Length: 122
Image 1 (tube, rainbow, N blue to C red):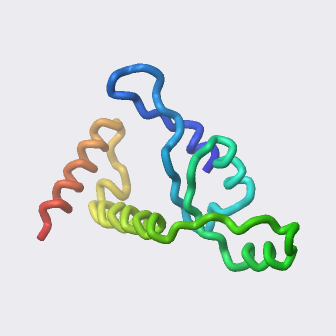
Image 2: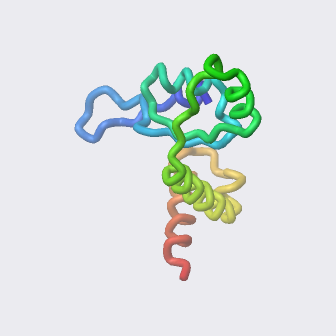
């Protein structure tokens, strides 16, 4: 996760230095390690990552040394699921799933066409 976040560059419409930090990050239980959470806190990125049962049990077992429970907003996590399902529906288009296109702008057009097809589907 850390390597991916380091490469984010979102240009600003009015110009200037590009954004390098998202407003909020959602992840599944696979990204719930202390290292990932510490990295996000250090960069002041709000996040919604559920805590697995085993990590929760270990924290409770340690008592006051286990630390505070992680903040988790189930409503935000539900929206993350909607996004993931939409991406999976986009991957039904074979060209999007396999990415045959060499150039990024061609692939962007393929994704746009698949998105329009999804949007127009009854």
